[in-house]
Image 1 (cartoon, one colour):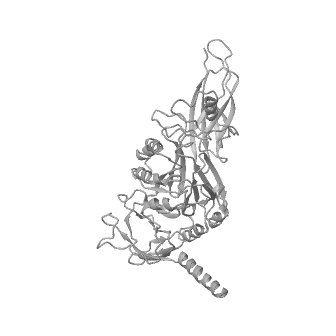
Image 2 (cartoon, helix red, strand yellow):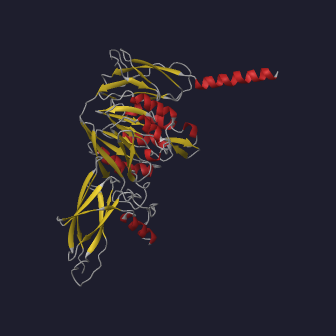
Image 3 (cartoon, one colour):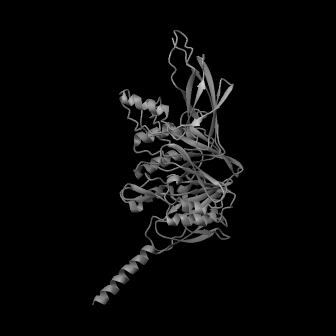
Length: 503
């Protein structure tokens, strides 16, 4: 009797385990969508040799554009777009939303999963915007996003594509649809990344399902012009709200399979939400990149602008932590548009990065939302006390402090005083002066004013401050030019005039 029970238990649960792990066969065609309607119509021909993936494995379409791939339920099937193809923008301006999420429990073959493509223009030079954390939680914040970063991206940044680096919403998947509608108003394709707040917090075992219903996949790849892009998910669920910043075994297998198709010297841009710098198993990814000479990593999540550097066997791999387009979570005094100023802990304004790529090389520029593109830094001079009546002769020297938003440990910074004296500035561990000023206004009960919320800033050092003491004896007015740059695509200049007259 006991043996029969044991056998029954093994048969029952063994069969259940098999059913749970059973594969679904997905079949379809990748085709030239002549009328751009997303439907495989009579006379439209398949495209051969297009890679198609389930997020782990990769197969190729045959001579007629047909493919077959085995998937688990709740996987996503997608083509890895070659540079010469694109999805029709009239279907959805978020290309990854054209992917097929298998939101089914069927154990049968799923046929007719087709992907219609158009020919794409190939450019030797192009640009992209890398946008961190919009992170809206309600209708008010949707309005803030639409009036600030979304309007700016829609109104002429002239980028060829956008990458939204996760946290599109703040723990409320019901907002995915209105966010998607916002992104569909941009004039260029927008690819999205999954973030830890883009999750279904009521069921962490399916935390990215709601995201994938709207945006297709949280792990995928595509090509644009002369560049290969890998989009990864390093936000693994841990309890209801928690997460581990790590890559799953499946996505690392996908990376391995994908990179086998990518020429070694091709520029590779890897986009993820959490910084690679803080990803627990980052060495496993770096091992897969061991012989890649030209890799750039883009990340968000931290709500500060910060750059990091990694190494593989042959090269440095730079990473840009791009900051957040919502700043410090849409907080602080509102500007003339009614949008919170949301100064970030590092002293940066809500922002994104614009990256220009030419012949496989890239350059970067920080862009504060709503401010001039030349606003790459802020510069301050220590207060000079009055020493005379009337016009002030000024003290012998002052300290110039510069917050260079895209600066890093590799950045060299020089100051030129009055177009003559050139001095090297030193990286300095300090709180950004604009953060200190705002904290003082809070401490003195000046802010927040009615109808505004307090910005949750702390007295923490910024990672991109430089300073130098300059001689200004007898000068009530003087000018400084600050030049910053490094060997990793960053260069910026600012001229500022200081007026120290006192009456």
